[in-house]
Length: 230
Ligand SMILES: Nc1ncnc2c1ncn2[C@@H]1O[C@H](COP(=O)(O)OP(=O)(O)OP(=O)(O)O)[C@@H](O)[C@H]1O
Image (cartoon, rainbow, N blue to C red; front, side, top):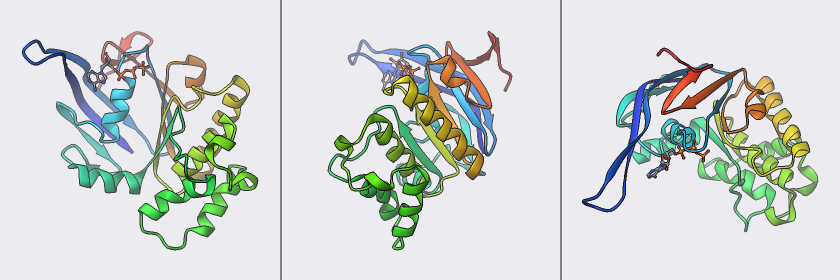
């Protein structure tokens, strides 16, 4: 479960002495329940990535608080975040972000190695089977199609059994047929494993696969043009 309360964030841009402050998020509050698929839509520059980066601890809010799975993470330092991410989160990106020198199998195995798990084979094999990649497990990323690469990245996100998966335009680089396949897989995994998905997209149709669609505009969450109450 994610509880974000009154989060504001601004960036300082430009040369020293001539800096400008741009306010990207203003007093954003939201609650995402366990097992929900929530999509966040908004125009380019509306602050979608900033919101995801705040929720996953890559940037810190100016004001407000964030609780995830019952833990107040607002004041976490980098070391605490690194451990928390490994224990609670999985990530899926538009450009897959697979490690080119590792095979599909090894890419999926990596988070388990980082967690110091020794019995990795059974889990990796199980996940490979679930996402339909057993036959191509020894391929390197450049020997896979876009859809297969995204499956590897979904498997890598899932392998540690996270409670939340953050997906940043997960179908943005895929053709429409493959997009449908990947969205179907995301919904199936959500239903089977009760994983929460927070997905950002600029595509209204993709966003409609969620249980709930939130719109970001002018740094605030709105629903049908009406500001959502905290
Ligand atoms: N590190 C940064 N430093 C300064 N400004 C930033 C930084 N990151 C984002 N911004 C600014 O914050 C605003 C929101 O950016 P953000 O990337 O969150 O938008 P977005 O909705 O994800 O856009 P897109 O759909 O194009 O990815 C933009 O005006 C952007 O220029």
